[in-house]
Image (cartoon, rainbow over all chains, first blue to last red; front, side, top):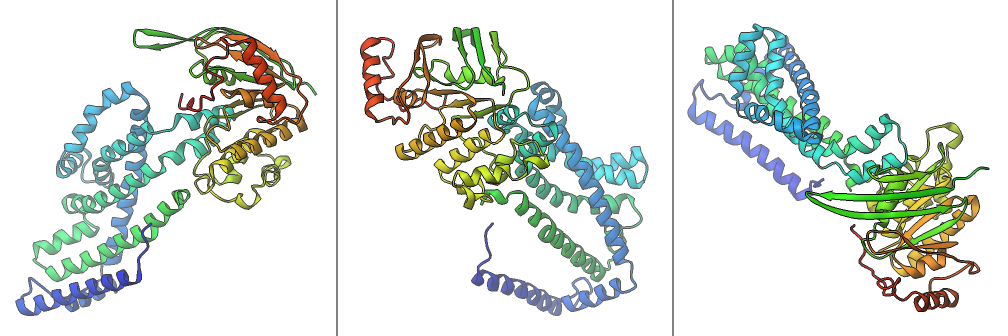
Length: 251
Length: 254
C-alpha cells in the first residue's frame, strides 16, 4: 500500500480546492443556467436530501449495484474457475467470452428489457451480464496460476474439502478476486445508471434522465456529486480495507 | 504401539512426453522396518522425488505397489518449504492438526520448542530460509506421524543451519521414533543421519546397494567416523558412487 505522505496530502487538498474554485469562477463568467456553480449545486443538493427524492433514489440504485455485483461475481467466478481448470470448458466457452466482452452495454440492456420486460430482474441481470465476462477472464487467470505444489501439501495433510478450499485454494484466488471486484465495480457504477435511465422509474439514473429532459443542470450535478461521493465512500471504506485484509500477508 | 513399516515394490514408473517414454523407476524394491531412519541417496535425475511422490500417494500412475498400513499418519517435508504464504506460522502448523480441543496448543508448544516462539504470528515471507524449513519440519511433526518422508529438506541452506536442522530432526525422531525415509544427494548427510542407506542407480532408478550403518551417534557430516565410512564406500564401490562423490550441489528444481 502506498502511504500518503504529508506533502502529498497537502497537494491533494490543494487540487480539490483548485477544482472547486475553477468551477465557481467559470460559472460566474458564464453566468448561464447551463453551468451552475458549486454553491448553487450545494443548495440544490441540500433541498434534494432534506425531504427530496434523492436518499430513496440513491438507496434503490445501491441495491441494484449490490444485487448485480453479487450476481456477476458469483457467475463470473464459477465460469472463470471452470475455464481455468478444464481445457475443454475453456475451448468451448472462449467464444462466448469474447462475444460477451465485445457486446456493447446498451445492446445487452435493450435485449434484457425486451426479453425480460421492463422489470427489476431484467435491469439487474442486464447490469450483471455486462460484468460476467470480465470477471470470468480475471478468475480464469487466477485458476490457471493455482500452485499445484501447495495443493499437494493439502493432499499429504489429508485436509477436509472445506479446509482445503478455505485455507489452501481460495487464498490463491483472492488477489484475482479483488482485481475483478475493483474493475467490476467501476464498470457497474457506470452501467447501472444507463440501465435505470432506459427502463426503470426510480433510481439515480432515472432521475438524471428526467432532469436531462428538462435541461435542469443544477439537479443533474447535485445528483452526480452525491453519487460520486457514495462511490468513493464504498471504494475507500469497503473495497480497500477488504483488499488490505485479504492480502496483508504480502507485506 | 504399532508403527508403520514401509513396503515398496515399484515395477515401473514411466513419464510420457509426447511420443517419448522416459522410464523413471525400474524394479525398485525395499522394505523399511518400524522406527528406522532410512536414507535414500542417488545421483541427479534418478527419480528420488518421484519415489517419494509415489509413496505419499501424490502420484498413482505407476506399475507395482506401495504398502503402508491404513489409517497411519503421514508427514512430509518437500524440497522447498511449501508454506501457505497467507497463513501465520502458527496457522501453517495447525493446518496439519485436525481441529479438536485435545490438540489445542500443540502447534504452539512444538514451535516454541523449535525456537520459533517469537515468530508464531509472523507470515512466512518475514522469516529466513532456515526458519521456514523449521516451520515445515514442525508442520510434518505436529501430528505425530508414523511415517515421515523428507525430500532433500535442507538443501540450499548454509552448513551450520543445515546441521542445526539435522540435529533437530534427530531429536524429534528420538522422541516418538517414526519411520523415516530421508532422500538426499549428499552422501555425507546420508551417512551422518541414517540407520541405513539405500543407493539408487542413475535413472531409471533402482536400489543398487543397501547399506546398514551402525556408526555410533551423535555423528557429524564432517566427523571422522562419517569421513572414514565415506572413504571405505568410495573405495569399495567406485563405479556405483560416481557422481555422488563430488557434492553435486545443483540437484534441485526437478
